[in-house]
Amino acid sequence: MDIGVLTVPLGGERIDDAAAYLDGLGVDAVELGVGGWPGQDHADRETLLEDEGAREDLRGVLDDRGLRISALATHNNPLHPDEERAATADRELREAIELADLLGVGTVTCFSGLPAGAPGDSTPNWITAPWPTEHADALDYQWDEVAVPYWSDLAEHAEDCGVDVAIEMHPNMLVYEPTGMLALREATNERIGANFDPSHLYWQGIDVCEAIRFLGEHDAIHHVHAKDTKVYESNSRVKGVLDTTGYAGESDRSWLFRSIGYGHGEEHWKEVISTLRMVGYEGALSIEHEDSLTSSREGLEKAVDVLDRAAFETEPGDAYWAE
Image 1 (cartoon, rainbow, N blue to C red):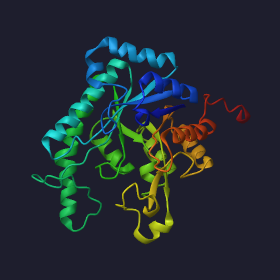
Image 2: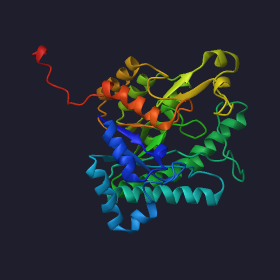
Image 3: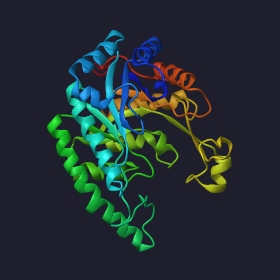
Image 4: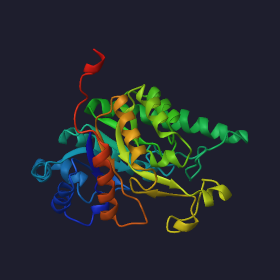
C-alpha cells in the first residue's frame, strides 16, 4: 500500500516545492484537487485538459520525486437544487473524469451531492429519520427522481473514460454511510464506489472495520482517505454527536477531526489496514489533514509517522506453514 496525501493543506506552495516536501517525508502518492471545495492550487483542471505540455510538466514534477497520482479530487454538490451550482459541480466532475483519463489516473474522488427535499425547494435537505412521513417521501424523491437518474448518467461517462468514481460517505450528503453507498452502486454501475474515509463514520458510531468488510464484499472501495476522528464524550453525553458547534469551538464540540493516531491509536490503524488488505484493497492511504489542533505540516508528519509503521510495503507471502 502507498502512503498518500491530499495536497490541499499545501496549496499555498508551488507543486514542485510541495512534491519535494512530501518526497522527503517518504510519501508515495498525491491526491490533487481539481475543483470544488478542494480547489485546484496544484492542478488547474481546464489548463491541463487543454494543454498536453502542461500535463507533461505535471507528470515530470511528480516523476522526479517518485510520486504517483492516486486520484483527482473535486468535492461539490452536483445534485444542488440551484441549477447553476449543480451545473458547475457537474462540469467539474465530468471534466475531472476526462482529465483523469488523459493523465492515466484511475480514480476521481467526490461527494454524492444532496438534493432538495421536493421540487421547487431551494435548499439541500439531509433526511435523517423516516417520520413524520413527509421526510420519508422526501427521501424517495431525492433518490428516485434526482440521484439515481443523475448518477446513472455520470456512471456511464465514467465507464466511457475508464475511470472509477470514489464517493466519500459524508453527512449532509445523500450518501453518508455504507448501505447508502452500496445502494447507489447497485443502481448505477461498478465504476461507482467509495472513497473510504473513516473520519465521518467514527462519529456516527459505525464500526470502521465492519464497514470495510461490508463494502469489500462487493469490491466497492475505490480509494481510501486516512483521516481520524475523536469523539469527546464529556460533550457527546450531553448533546449527542449531531453537533452544529463551529469547528473553531474545539472544547465545546462532541467530536473533532484529528490527525492519524490522535483519534484512534496505532493498533487500531494497523487493524484498519489489515482489514483493507483482507478485502483486496492495495491502493493509496491518502492522508486528509483537517485537525484544527495542529498545523498542517505537523499533522501530516505525525500521520505519515503512524502509517509508515502500520502500512504494508510488500505483497503477502505464501502460507508455507500451512503446507
